[in-house]
Length: 506
Image (cartoon, rainbow, N blue to C red):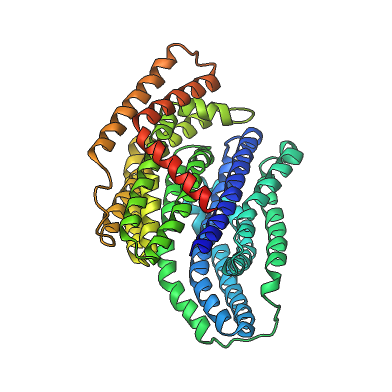
């Protein structure tokens, strides 16, 4: 058990490192593209169309990975020769599915352009339609990449799939620096296909030892393929809600103003840095949670998840406040150069402030959803997600009417809070020791810490000129983090102790 735990941690650690590198490169990519292309109607058109296809691919990827891996492992363990045959059948099935979806979206592109950007003129809708059709064929290559990635994951090779994000960022950065200033935003569209081709070759070669080509036409659907189709149905419905939620946000933001969609994406990049960190940390804790559950150490499971949540929340509170109070400075430092206009800075600032309110609740959302997965409960987290998504859609529509792009991202934060609270409450059903998740002194300390951080942030504005954006943010962040460390010192000590335990097990 100890060897298995160490092996799992090493895999999680290696994946975490690649994810962080990918996010850092993505961050750099956004800085470069913001400076070269700015936030214009052309970048909005590209982002709207590419995100539409990307969101469809996200749904198909999650559905495929979740439904394919357990069946494939079972098939492979019982008959390795049939495992290759099963993969061949899956390739053919999902090729047909991806072609059908591609044709559907290509044919309905004029209608889709009106739905996702209802305020656009006829000329802009026509251009958006062309971009949607341009990106539609990418679905086929994206589905193949998902199949290759799933095969690798099923054979305990996780790094290759995560490395795809690195490839995408490197390609876009290189092409933007090389020809971006002369060719304009169209480079983003061209670069996307260059990335898809390179990624396809990379993943197909990496997964090649685990599959064999079979070009024979075989329309027979055996029991294993039927199982995947049966599993894929409800999964598709669940992830389709996420897709609808993302598209509703895009529809709302597209009507706020020129460049709003692009600016929203830049603010999301900053939030994703925190989301990635929490996701990686949650994955590490999930390893130990699963181990304790398997060993029936119920009290240790409860103690671990409670401590993990408190430590993460203590770290996230000052980050949230720093983003809220210094949003304009942060956006200015990172993006306000070249073609990135003052209007784009205003949009991105408001979006970042709205997103920042979600940060303290990210740990409870991620940790307690994984806690329920550890007890083999995937239904309740899906229900909690559905409730939060419905809330998000309703609040986005209402709040955006009064406070614009800030209302859209604030709605996202409120839905994250709802999901985090529901996950905490529902987790108590699985473990009788899961009580006092949040103690009164923790809540009180958080309030006091937040007040101090806000006071320091505004107090420093009187002494550090607005032109010194970087210094102001750096000093504010340093003092805010110091205050939080003092307020939650006991959790800092616990965190250091837990890291030492992890190091010893490695």
